[in-house]
Length: 285
Image (cartoon, rainbow, N blue to C red; front, side, top):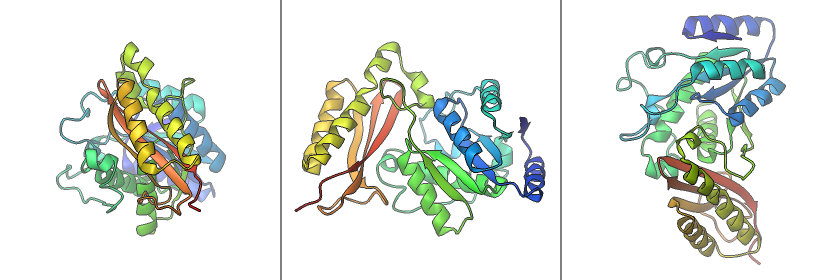
């Protein structure tokens, strides 16, 4: 597996694959890889002849006071893991390659509506940074298919909407959340957790599982949310939000909506944990 940093080298390599009639899959990452990322790469290998992973800690999606400087950077370890997983190419550009005019001079991509709710309310501007860098990566790599984990469900929908609205010729594939044996969704930020915090962290998944069961039994959405928030507090987590939304667009749920997703975010020490579960609930009679 080669590591490429320059855009011209990337495009030359992809052009060679294209000339050979090979499909290209992209897995965008910020590095500090775990089995969730590697699952995406393995899935990419099954959907295209060539798999590219990008590694770029995107400053545009970090807000003031967030963990940009502290975000773990483990390039050599990541490179080894990608190579062992069968990745063909690691694209690891410098910020000057991605944002040659700097962040302030960068044209930005915004997906209105989806970007301001839930995680977007807590992290204003976050999804503008995500949409912008993903759009740029799509233009740089020009993949046929790109793969994203469903743990970041709102991010996945933002990217799908962007691709649809901008008519980008990229198939977007969501891959099921990869979890630890105790249910905690794998995340690069789990490394921030102390031993005690790590023991408490699965409470987010447990609260969503209980909420999902209640929704399937016909319990009212407001009561489901209230109970989940209380369960998080009782477990020592500080809830950011718990919400039940329509699966396709994260709109408010009506009595007739059957396919919904319950999403939650909570703070635990230095970490902000997110998770979600899709639910088929009982429709109103």
